[in-house]
Amino acid sequence: FPSLRVAFAHGGGAFPFLIGRVDHAFRVRPDVVAAENRTSPRHYLAHDGVPARFYVDSHVHDADALRLLLKLFGAERIAFGSDYPFSLGETHPGELIESMKLPQKQKAQLLSGTVREFLRV
Image (cartoon, helix red, strand yellow):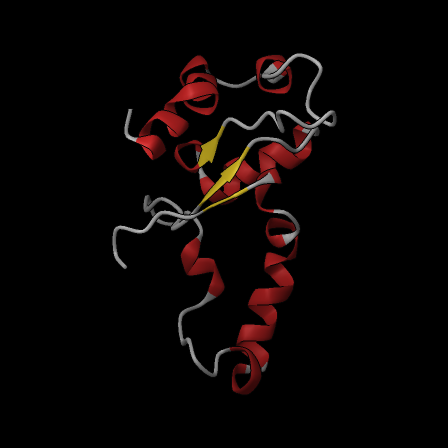
């Protein structure tokens, strides 16, 4: 399914923070971890100017976590997330992104650019 696009909520959950462990397991135990897929897990993240292969949202409540997502996925694969209609969302959606010292172009990408591209609107 080459045109299938996949997005994960809450910054991709634990995956971004476990990529080192997943990649290590891929290298040292390919008999277990890479039995069906010989592609490194890091290949699916942003690398060498190639965007990440899947999307995550920005709803992480933490500037350091969002910076890690920017490094691993790139702004073009991080969609604005609000957690609406649940009560654990940001009090002021977008406040974390706006409060960070990021280039305006990157903020615009995070706040609306990625989701517009993902939804093709």
